[in-house]
Image (tube, rainbow, N blue to C red):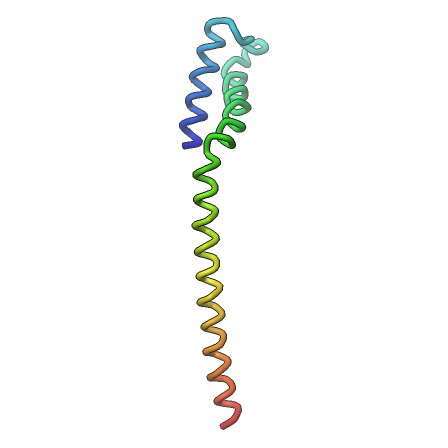
Length: 89
């Protein structure tokens, strides 16, 4: 999705440069200028537009981490029980 936002900004900036509404850059730097300006525009746009997806991904990752921690704690308690049984014997 972020790549799509960047490509959209790239097309928009290239169109604006071609129309003369945005400066074309310095000398032969036109392609680099267009890409840089598209990156600068797409970063805040993707931050705002993709907030919902970012929050959903964060919740999914948090749930997986909590599940992994529970499994790790369960495995530790099993190992402790076996270790305690062997020490008593």
